[in-house]
Length: 125
Image (cartoon, rainbow, N blue to C red):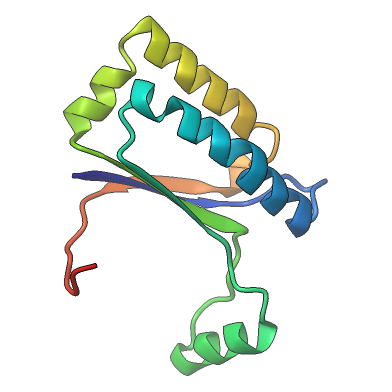
């Protein structure tokens, strides 16, 4: 199983609420609509809890950096080969372009990051 994790920063002109609303209500459904074309097995959005006291407590307990992103996204595919193959078709390339075009409406790519990985399940879900 291949997993893509992305930590996302919003565009500077968007409030957190505008960013989260667009991400949840517009981008999420777009990803869902393209899942079969792009062979996406699972997609999860995670937003930081808007509780400054709780955030400070966890940060201070481990001397961590402050949270410096507006959300994280996780996407799963059966394999890197499957992920790549979905992008080689005309339909897959068009779907990827649509996602990228939409992301440009709310994601500041210059301050976001993404990486591929594999999970090690320690406590089964």
